[in-house]
Image (cartoon, rainbow, N blue to C red; front, side, top):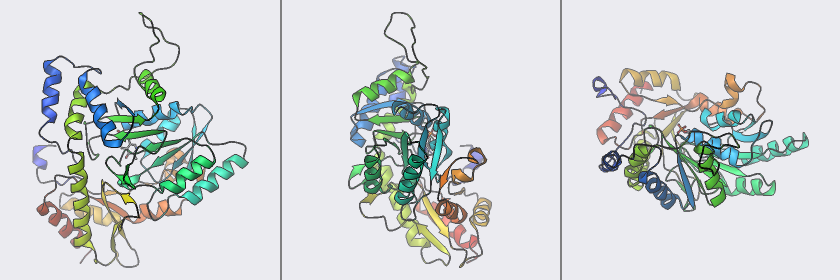
Length: 382
Ligand SMILES: *Cc1c(COP(=O)(O)O)cnc(C)c1O
C-alpha cells in the first residue's frame, strides 16, 4: 500500500505476523525458489490440520482450485453445473473454462447462500428437461455457512457431487466442523483480501487420496510416468510457489486469532451501529450451529427508513478515505451471463440493491472502527 495512503482504511488488507519472513528467508537460503519445496508440504499439512481434510494441494489461486475441482468431479464440455447467483464471479468462471454451463440458483435470506427450495426446483426442472447437472458448487459467502444439512440432503438424494467454494470461509465452522470439509472437494483462497493471504494463492482439499493425486497431476502439466516429457491429457500450471507457501505457513499460525478478531470487529459494528434508523448490521444473530469467520462486516439499508443508498454511503466514506464495497452483484444480472438459466433471483437482487461491505481487516484498531462508524453516521445524515 502506497505511503501517501497511510490514513486510508481498506476493506480487507493483508495482515501479516512475525513468522512469514522466516519461512520465506529459509526458502531463499535453501534455494527452494520454485513451485516445489518443503514449504508446500508444510503449508498443506497446516491446512489439513486446520480443516480436518485428509489431503490438500496448494495452488496458484482459489479460481484454479475451483477449475481443477470441477475437472475432478468429471465436468465436461456441454455439462451443466449448479451454482449460486449471489457470489463473486470467480465461483462461476471455472464452469466456463470447462466448456460447461452454469445453472444459477437464488439465495435465501437467513444465510444469503443458495436456497434449498430453489435448488430442489432447479434440479427437478433440469432433470425434467432431460439433463441432470453434473455438480453443485456450494458457496459460504462472507464466511457464513450455507444451509448445509438441507443442501447436502438434496445433493445426496439426487447423487450430485458437491464442490465447496470456501474461498471466503477459512476458519468458519458449522456444528463445529470446519467449512471446506463438507463436499467431495473443498476450495480455499489466499488472495490478498482474504482472511489469510499468500498475496495470491489457493488450495484444494479432499478426503479422497486418488482425487488429491489427480489434482496435483493436473496442476503440474499432467506429466505421465516417463524419463522424458510424456503427456496423454491436458495439464495446467497451477502449482503454488514454495516462496508463497512460506508466507502461507506463517499465516496459518494466525488463523484462530484472525477469526477471533474479525468476529470482534463484526460485534463492535453491531453494537455501535445498531439502532441507526434504516441500517442493519447483517447477518445477526448467526443461524443455529453456524460459526462465521465474519470475513467482511456487511450492512443493509432499508429504503423505507433512510434516503441514503449503498452508493451515496460508499461515496461519502470515500471522501473520508475509507474504502467500502457493494455486496456481490448477482451473476444472473451480469452481461457475461445474460443467457444463463436462473431459478429465482429476487433475493440476491434485493441484497445487492441494499447492501454494503465495511472495512473489516483484522489489523483495525478501535480508533479505525470509530472513524468508520462516525463516517457512516454522517453518510446517513444522522
Ligand atoms: C476470492 C474468491 C474466489 C477466488 O479466489 P482467488 O484466489 O481470488 O482466485 C472464489 N470464490 C469466492 C466466493 C471468492 O470470494
